[in-house]
Length: 194
Length: 194
Image 1: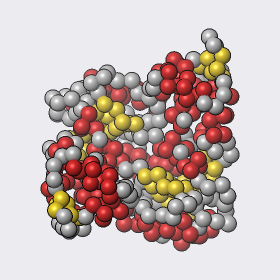
Image 2 (image 1 turned 90 degrees about the horizontal axis):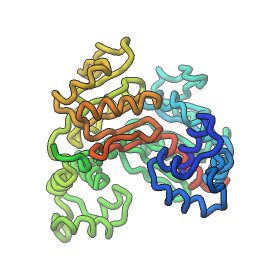
Image 3 (image 1 turned 30 degrees about the vertical axis):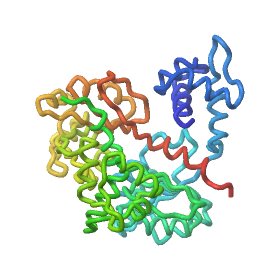
Image 4 (image 1 turned 135 degrees about the vertical axis):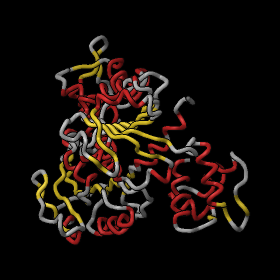
């Protein structure tokens, strides 16, 4: 679903109002039959010979994925990766809004990046009051569990974690880990022998 | 397999010589039965009551994943994300070595980051001669397809792509895309209603 949503949002950006399952399939790199099957589960958004209504379908997928309200989120760790995340252009189209940024380094606290003033990690506990339930962690591995614990105590329910390690959290909290080296480690296996 | 490898490498870093399936399971966040099943496919690396030999098992998984030789790779795009990738500490343990970095911005060309001198993207064609078959792309979306085309022409067989878009490449080339916003977009669905 998120893959389709990305395809639809990019299509919409390009000014297209409708798209065929074949074109959407090419765009996102899946099979057109799979698309028709997946979309049939939640009603009929397509017209034969015209295609799917891009706006309506994107809105419906957003609703299903609970992306139909703006989601405020916090960033912890404003190093190179954190800065890249702050500058990332595509969060907005999914309804995400980075509303706060934190770092453990006192030298970084107070710095202003993209209209956001970096706060010290000791202020993470203010997230509850600020109703921020989503966080992106771009901290060194050694600080990962401790940071996650602080986020959980502050009422955060979803964490996107860039530290290459397993993080223990209560069942009511969802963690998605992006481990860049591990994704890279999958490549050589698929590469043809030279 | 890459998840187990990460668990074993971290265990090894901590000086442990053997690990039980239960401890490895806790460490990587999967079921111990699954681990025993997966490992049984390629012979017996465990001793009842002692556990798996960490070094031997890591070596075997590296061999299976074709990570048993040093893989030279190129980085294209030395912005915030590219710089974070250059500084990433964990590539080495998987056998990856960033051997070259490229950027389209003339101001960045010649700059030295972590012993690597940034070259202009027009030099991508030298990758063939330098026997670099793996590349990480951290370029803006608009430049993604063009960059991938240049990499393919230069003989690159595996691409880790951070641009949030589908990239068309010949079948003999493997692309893995990391789309940060899309991974984030999966979170709200799993978060409990508040």
